[in-house]
Image (tube, rainbow, N blue to C red; front, side, top):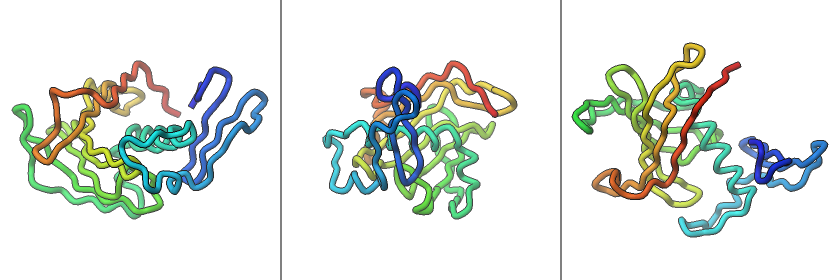
Length: 179
């Protein structure tokens, strides 16, 4: 990620290591086995910049590669009962990720509309304890790949997403380059 966390520096993510480099690729800081650094964390725990980099790194990797991520070896996918929301019927997939794929949690649910487009993604964050619904809107095709360009994450309770509550994360994508 660039710039991260400041202009002139770059944040790097891998599942087992995150690091920040400055000018001339000088290593400024690193964290090995970053997932372990969240042990005991709760939703109000303050993170350091390397923990933020880890969370953003795996989250973005997951968000931007779904649904292709679901075809990775070891990922268990099962279609479950249809879900009705906002006048539409969606086809949900119950997904279990293997431990080697860094993600919010092992079990997640993805909801697709009748065109096969991702509409909603439910998860709990193991690293912070948050429970969320991630909505996907404004799907645009870039180089034959359809990308939801507007994403909104809201809190989810036992009775469902808190649609009219605060937005936890808002992602707006204006351009995509695939290679």
